[in-house]
Length: 458
Ligand code: UDX
Image (cartoon, rainbow, N blue to C red):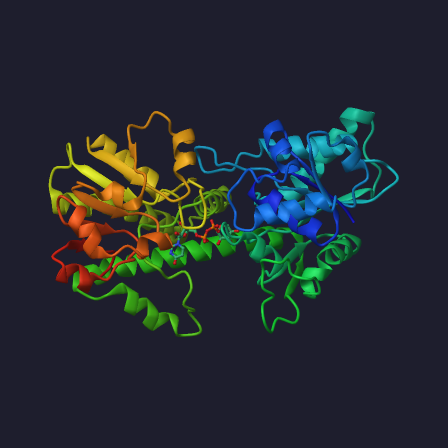
C-alpha cells in the first residue's frame, strides 16, 4: 500500500519505518529540512534502539523516503497518517496547530478519483476526528473552490501505545491494535495494512526476536470516539498506577515498611498486575503529563470534576519536590553544596528530556544556589542544546560526577549506574549522602558502608 506519514517525530518515524519494513511504500513528510535530510541518509534524528539499522534497511530497499513536498505522495496515497506533535498549551489543552496545518495540506492535495483513509495517530482530544475531517475539507475548498465529493476520504483513529526505548518492538509486537472508524471500507483497509503484524507473519528484522507463543494480536475495532478515549484512558490508568505506588511509598516510609516488597506483594495478584508499580521520583516523558492534563481539561469542558486524575497529577508533582526535601533534611542548607546528579532522561533507554523529573530538581537546586554536576550516558548532548544557559557542570563519567560531591541524587535508573559499587561511590563523596530516586541500590548495604541513604518508600 502507499502510505504517507505527516510528522517524522517519534511516533511518525518509528511507525513509518516499521510499515516500510513490512513492505508498504512509505513517504514521511516533515517541515524540518535537516530532519528530512538525516532520515534520507538513514541517520535517525532521535535516539531509539534499533532505529538506525531499520532505517538503513528501508532506505536501501527503497520502501521509505522522507520529503518536505507532500503533493505527489498524498495524491497517490491509500492511507495517510497524521503523527505531528500536539504540545500542551499553558491551560493543559493540546495545541492542535500542527494537526490543523497537516489536515489542510492533505485536503489541498487529495485527488477526486481515489479513496483515502486519513488516520489520527497523534494523541488528539476526544472528538478530533470530526475536526480533522472539517479541516481536510477546508483545505480542499481552498484549493478547488468546491467541497470534496462524498466518499473520497474518511478519518479514522488508530492510537499508538509505543514506549520510547522499545518503540520498534512495541510497534511490531503490540499488546493490541485499536482501530476506530465510521466506515467498514476504512476498517478493512487498515486491517490489511496491519495484517502481517496482526498475524505475526513477517520475518522479524535481524536484531529483534519474535515473541514466543503469540498467535494473533488482539484487534479492537470500534467507533472513533471510543478509540480516542482508549488512548487517554490507558495513559491515565498507567500514570495513576505509578502515582498509587508513590503514595504507598510515602506511607511505607512513615511507618517503616519497604515499598519494593509491598508492591511485589500486591502485584502478584493477577487482578492488579506487577507492571508500573515502581515507586520513585514520579513519571515524566512526552505523553503521561500531557495526556492526563488533556483528559482533565476535556472532563471539565463537560462540567465533570475528575478528582482521581487530579490526584494522580498532584502526587506526581509532590514526588519530585520530595527529592529536594530529603536532601535538605540530610544536608540542611544547600547553598554552595556540590550535588552530583545521575540521569537526566525521563527514563532509561532514551535521550528524551521532555517533562523529565531531573529538570525540575535541577532548577530547584540552582534556585537554592547549589552547584550541580550532572552525568547521563546519552542525554547530555540534548541537555546542552536545550538548556544552554543553565549553570550546571557536565561530568565525563558517573564516578567523575561524584568526586568531591556533598551528595548524590539518582534520577534515572540506567543500568550503568546499578553496576557501580556503593563502596566506590562512598570513597569519592565528600559527604556520604545518597538520595536514590529510583531505588536502584540496596539500603542495607548502604547502611553497612555508613552511607546516609534515602530511597523512596523504604
Ligand atoms: C508512555 C506509555 O507507556 C505508552 O504506551 C504511550 O504510548 C506513551 O507514553 P513512555 O512515555 O515512552 O510511554 O514511557 P513509559 O515507559 O511508559 O514511562 C513513563 C514514565 O513513568 C517514566 O518517567 C518512567 O520512569 C515512569 N515509571 C514507569 C515509573 O516511575 N514507575 C514505573 O513503574 C513505570
